[in-house]
Length: 578
Image (cartoon, rainbow, N blue to C red; front, side, top):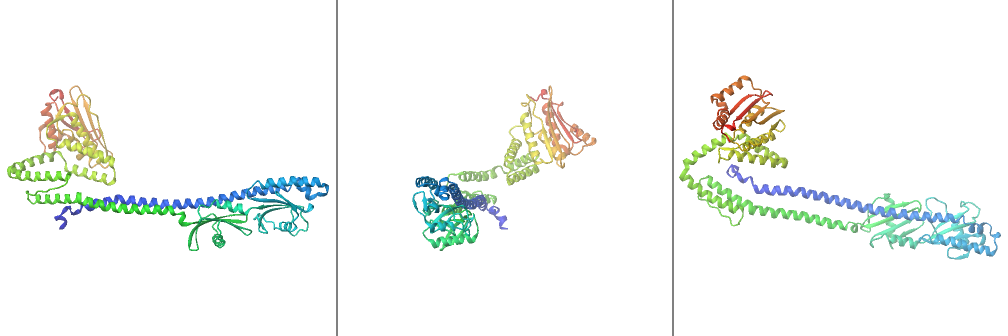
């Protein structure tokens, strides 16, 4: 009951706000998807960067040490070293010294080949000398035994000997249980300081760290040995080589990754505070929250704006119209803002005054005139045609077919503009044909899946011929209603425009319901005798054409080549129609 009393209470305000929210919600959801995607992408990129950095460093370090080891093994074949170690008695003191100096040059070249080499030693028992790249000293038997007894393994080439890191090469090679003494040993002492210094180059902040850890040595960028040990234990236990993992050490959250090297028999671990890594994401998250807050504020402001400047003026106008409906023509409404509503209110006030005056002065005459106009319009406009096209417009708007929607509305506008214009009873032929073409195109869109329309172009030099209004479109309309409307598929409507020496023929034919000879004869007889209620519209067109262009003009019907209806309109424009 309340809905019938206030039909506008379907609430345009709520619909406007709801539509605005429906616009913002997809944008908000899209922003959330982009935000989450960005977070995941950034986390993945950070993880890949950490993994790549650790792997590249370790592979580079391993490659460098393999090159050093290759130089070390090449030194075992040095002629001077072999002469000093195997046949020292064949050399006199001067030759021995010369061989030692040349050997020392070879060892110094190896030392200078890498910044990680602290010194290179050749332990030669035969001459009781230790020859290094930098010095020549007395033979160190204890160090010789320590280097000799290093267990052979393919997994760890770097060994801890008395606190130093060594790469050792014994010649000739012998097992630890062998009683044969080596001729000499070439040992490369590595610099822990340089390794640590190079690790620190990969650290970007004091809270980050790297640990190179093996059973032989530990090199770290952090001074806290207990912390390093705890990190290493977590990494080894997890077993996730080459994968970023989250650790909690001493109540702090870290992202850590490690990789292993068989050459060193060691593990390289890198850890970074999680807060430092994802600090940029906090700003990103803050901006996203700000976006949500701004969207909410915009909705509120928009709702208030629509309520004040659209809903309230509309509500006032609707209330005023309701008073007019109940016969109160004294109602006047005011609007203080100079906008469209002020103009509408002003015209409403003028309208209400005019209505009151007209009702008193010309009530009966107006009613009669309205009835006459209504009859004319009803004869021109098929209500079903109007309703169906409005429904099509609604469907196009709902599915978003905006391209066809624009074309369709333009065509309807042209159609109704032509139909409702009463200023003249005659129009140029081109306008009449254009109106009929617009109507045919509208119907073609309505029945797009069921029929096709073939419409000829108007021949040249006859578009200026003045003809009665609405003579071609009703014929086409009749073809749709009585011939093609019930056709489920493959319908054809053809409109041909033919010009001869003094005649114009407009032919409308279809493949609709089959028309028998008796029906054709009946229609032609009705046109000839000017009778027949069922074809009042066609008869009216026939009479208007004959009245304008003479007895040789008119409308004739027959069966089309497809078995449907065919109407031929003949206009003898040389007989007086120009």
